[in-house]
Image (cartoon, rainbow, N blue to C red; front, side, top):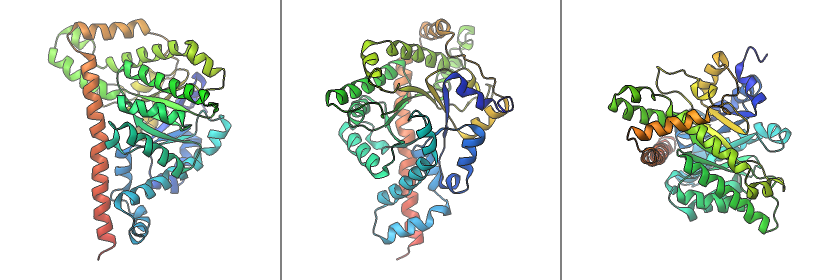
Length: 371
C-alpha cells in the first residue's frame, strides 16, 4: 500500500501530513473522511483566504445565512456561525485521530480575525472566545507570529488553549515563537496547572520566500545569484529545524517535557510550488523529518501521492543550508528585510480576503433576505 502512495510513508519519519483547506462541501460529501483513509491526512488548517473561497458564492451555506439574518445576527456573527460549525464538524471527524495519538494529531485550526495581528489584548480575547465557543479539545487557534501576536501566544498557552502560530518567515521569528510557547507552559506550571494536554505548532512559510528572493536574485543576474534560485526557503527551514533541535536540549524545555509537555512542532506552510520550473513536491520531499508537520493544499497532496520520493532529508545538509544563507548575504540581500516585508504582506493577504468575505456575506444577506 505504501509503495503505491508515498504520502503514507511520511509518518514513518515522524512527520504528520495535514491539509490546508476546509469547506462544508468537503465535510458533507464525505471527501474529508476519504482523504483521512486514503491520503493519511491527520489534521487540517484554515485561514481567512480559505474561508472566503469556501463561503463566497457557495449555496451550501445559504440556509444558515438566511437563518442567521432572520435571527438578527450581524454579518460578523453570521460568519462566525458558519465557520465555527465547519470547524466543530471537522474536529469531530478528526477526534478519533486526536484520541489515538494522545493529542499529538487530529487538530483543526481557525484563525483569529486577521486585523488583530498587531493587537495583543484583542488577540487574547478573541482566542479565548473562539476556543470556548468551538468547545472541542482538538481545535487550534491560529495567531500570527508578530511581536504582538507572540505576546498573546504566551498568555493563551498559559490559559490552556492550543495554538497554531502562523506567518513565520525568519529563523528568529521561529525561535521567538518557541520561547513564547515555553514561557506560556512555565506560567501554567507556576499556577499548578497541567501542561500535558496542550499542543502547539509553529507554521513556518516556504514558497513565498522563494518567490520573493528569486526576484531579487534574478535582478542581480550573476552566476552566483542564479545558483541560489529556489534554494533559500528550504535552507531557511533547515536552519530553523536546527534551532528547534537545540531548543529541545535546553534545560527549561527538558523540565517541561518531564511534566508531559508536548513538543511544539515545526509546521511547514505555504508548500505549493509557485514556480512551474521547480518540482511541484520540492517542499515535501526536502523537509521530511521527525517532530514536524507538513500542511499541504489539495493539489500538492495529489501530486505527492502520485510521485513523491520520501526519505529523511531534514536531518542532513545543515552546513549547506547555513552556506546558502551566507551566500545570499554576500550578494547584498538582507534576508531580515525580506522576511519583515513578507510578514506585512502575509498579514494583508489574510486581511484582504477576510474583508472580501464580509462584503460578500453582506451582499448575500441582502440578496437572500430582501426587505
